[in-house]
Amino acid sequence: MQDKITKILKAIADPTRREIFHALVVAATALPITQISNQFDMSRQGVTKHLKTLEDANLVKIDNKGRERYCSANTIPLKEINEWLKFYEQFWNDSLDNLGKYLDMT
Amino acid sequence: MKDSISKEHIFNHSIDKVWNAISKAEEISTWFIKADFKAEEGYEYTFTAPEEKNCTEITGVVKKAHPYTLVYTWVVAGTDVETLVKWQLEKSDTGTKLYLEHSGISNYTGETAVKMFTSFNGGWDNCIHGLSQYLTQAIHAG
Image (cartoon, rainbow over all chains, first blue to last red; front, side, top):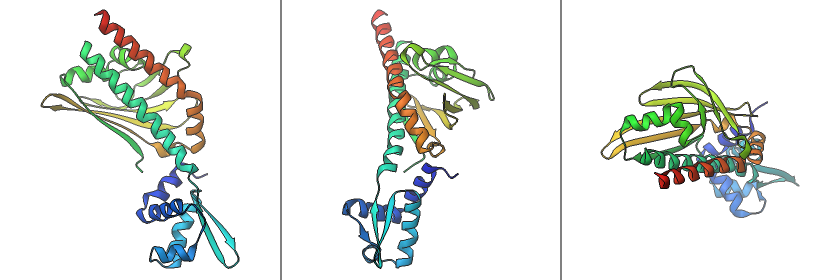
């Protein structure tokens, strides 16, 4: 079983995939693959490969409508990672504050 | 997005004082979490937060412990996910520069991460809050 967060991190590690994902988030609607490949000046094949990686990480949904395939963004998986990071950010900030106070008083 | 959290902090205290604070059980227990800890490679440590506050327990193994680098694994009770915490100290003009890195976020599955938050989120806030209060009181008392 492949780890979910590893897939997400891998998917968003690539700058082009981040841009594609960002474009889909901003569009806030499903976009046809043809339009995405035009926008990014990339071959349909290249874009499809990136979209597949994003789909594997559950960051993108791809639906077939007639002869065209439509893609839309799913931001929920990113929220999970963000929660984890936020939690430990706060935890370590508070802990280092305490360490500072402790050092000052001893 | 990085697979880690990094912090940098300067303390106006000597490097040995800061080193003792992060590596001696008695001192860790005062400012951080109640600790059974030895700064020895291979030592299996336990951090136990107060139960009545619904805090959790952290266990792990010391991987590196020589001045001024301390590395240990970090496993939250109820999960089998291992992350890594690294402390590094460096002398600076005004005291000591501390680097802290907590890495291995990709070892968490989404489900584990979410479960961890729902069960411990309030818990750790309480622990840290309690500790701040204790220190504030100690400062005023002193």
